Image (tube, rainbow, N blue to C red; front, top):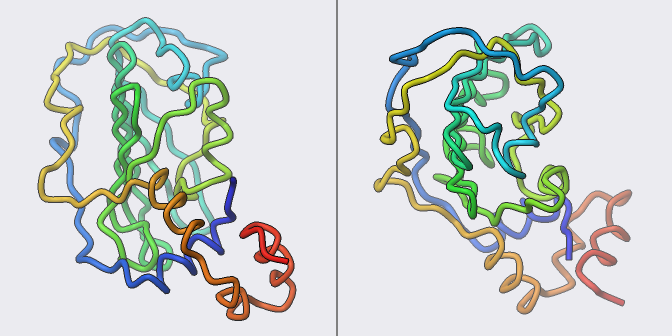
Length: 205
């Protein structure tokens, strides 16, 4: 069952899943960058399917309102790491890191529920990566982001390590457990225009 972001956020808040926010990453610049390579036509979502068959690092930037979003993505086989930086931050959201081992995508940074979570993990849907965007992925993440400005990269496997000091909420298991225990009255807290959608999403009469 898919649950909208607003409903999921309400469930998270109501269940008091609050811990100190934490972020970070192994580097600010890629080491051992080689010649430019062309992966024209590829987008970020393609990484979830079969990678790009290259060890590479790609850079992307785009304006968001009055800020600038910069994304650096490191790729090796079916693994990748994407580092997002919003400068200046928008409503407290300034950074996000996503690492995938091919089975799970792990996300952490300050772009969650007003710093109410450290991070989360979710199963990678290789059959339909774009469906993940409709569930729990931060709005930072654009699955249609073009992979441009790419160069060969001598792999540093530490870039794909997941921090041990971050508690990752398993969104797949969390949604299942919350749906089993949910009280339909929680929808009374939703704005009037979203009340029926909330009831329908939770399977309430």
